[in-house]
Image (tube, rainbow, N blue to C red; front, side):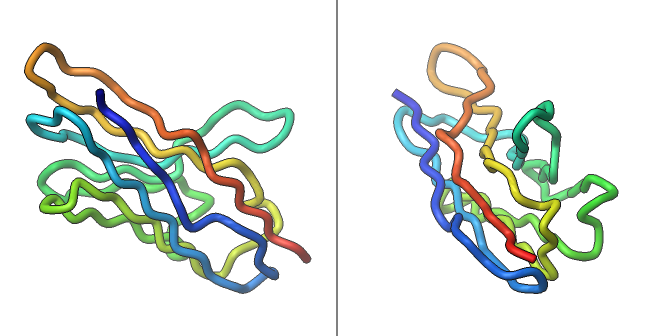
Length: 119
């Protein structure tokens, strides 16, 4: 059973930094793209950053220059380094991974980790 386990959320003051991690485990044959999404109260879930299996990245305009996504393929883990955080970055952050198992390819989601940025 594939699982994505996130860690690293918390409370930080504006201008501070946090690093999120998401580790995938359980019956994995290979992992394609991985990414981070976020959902603020009353808003739709949005893509924050994504990284391909080859390391190509893309970012939401709102986080370009402040956030960096990376991955460790040996550990099946994706990271999101968040710098210069702003109150508008407050949201639940979700990890997503497109994973191939023995039987299928599927988009899996983590349980979410809360990020709160105080002004």
